[in-house]
Image (cartoon, rainbow, N blue to C red; front, side, top):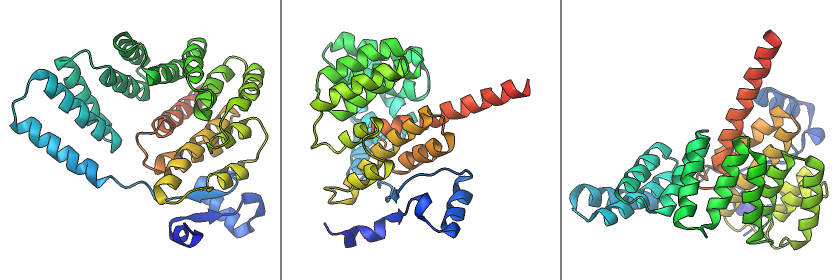
Length: 306
């Protein structure tokens, strides 16, 4: 698809170092800091899927009008919960997952989703319990290792997080996202060793997956601007662009957050949230990253005040 089609949907801003003083002032006024953010690419937020809305209406109608066995009702509630989750209605999703589990406690996927929501709400102990339940029911549940590893990482248990995230990576050594999450957890323990490990696994990663560029960025092999340029490669529609931007901005935000560059990191996390790709791991935890940044800022201010 030609660039002409994308032009109305994109705002391409030159790097801060290369733009005019008036553009720089506008950016600084908007961001309230002196962050330098490379090439900024903005896409339309993902719209709410019409089919999802119709499916929600149908499931709600069935659940309110038709008497079905408990197991089937649990499945309908779970399916509606997934749909609520996909459109950003997390409270309603959790309510349906809870109802489904009361009717059928052996639903591994429902436990997994509950664990994700508990992690987003920073209820880490409950999140661990839900992921443990998922793996008790289905020991081969691939993404329960990812999700529990992420919960352990944000819950301040990086050593345990590394075990889960390394197990998740071992199941597909060509996946750059798996390598990145293992690296993020390992970095919380030993940054030098984590970088050495990431460099070691780089050779196994698929160059066909654009996110391998993110790994190269973390390794210092490519620039921030190059990451944002590379994600445009192969994009043929707005959804692909929005999905890639959600991913890119989260990992760029994480990079800057770990370097204590709070202004830049916060902007990137907000950009990830602006995509509305609610089901992506990157969207889910961009808000959590912002909340954790605010908490740390308040704590630092309290220390200075005292």
